[in-house]
Structures are given as C-alpha cells and as structure tokens.
Length: 172
Image (cartoon, rainbow, N blue to C red; front, side, top):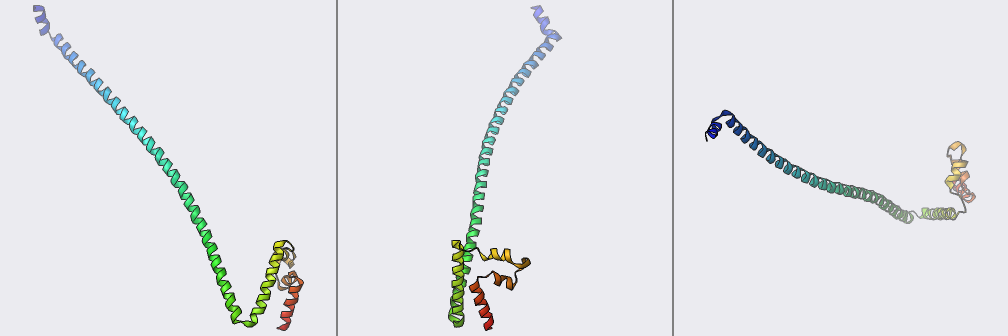
C-alpha cells in the first residue's frame, strides 16, 4: 500500500496522468473534427451537384431562348418583307386608281394610253413565251459606247414602235 501511496505522490505519475488526459482529449477532438470535415465534404458535394443541375438547366433554357430569339428575328424579318409587299401592292393600287382617274379626266390621253398598255402587254407576253429577248439585253449589247441616247433607244425598238414614235414626233 505504501508503494501505491508513493506512486500517487510522485510527480512523474501526475505528469503522466495529465499527459494521458490531454492525449484522450486530443484524440476525441480529432475524431470530432474528422466527422465535421466529412459532413462539410458531403454538404459541398451536394451543393456542387445541385449547382451543376441548375447550371445545366440554365444552359438548356439559354439555348431554347436563343433559338426562340432567332425564330422571332426571322419572323420579324419576314414580316418586314411581307410589309414591303403590302406597301408595293398598295402603291400599285394607288397607280391603278390614278390611271382610271386620268382616263376619265383626259379623253385625248385615254386612247394613246390604252394602245401603249396593249403594246407593252403584248411585248411582255412575247418575252415570257420566249419569242423575243428582253429589250434591256438589246440596250446593253447594242448601245453605242455604253451610253443610252435617244437614237440608241429608238434603234432598239421594234419597227412598229419606231413608226409610232416618228409619227408622233412629226405631229408635234
């Protein structure tokens, strides 16, 4: 018993006990920190998975929005083209109504106008059927030095149009 009493009163024993106690606290703290680190890694991996899913969804939405934007841009451009056609149709209607008013208001002009329209219609029908080449081809190839003078235009006209033109110039 006395050996136990001397061991308990010795400074080495108390140092050993204190060191052992601190070692046990250190090991417990280590396991606690290791568990906390494992939990934080789990949270981090979960967060990264969620962010990856959200990023994938955002990229998908961005791609769909880009395609929708492109489609809408194409529709707007085609709408502009259609609006151009509407404007051309409207302008054609204005010219047709103005022509009718001119025919009614200018009786001397009406017969010449109608003859000119019939001649232009027959020329266009001939060009469309392939019987003659368009006049602009003749003007381009047969004009003198690339300039379009009055004589070059008259030379390119068919003979019946030349007679009408010379006859109308003789009347003036």
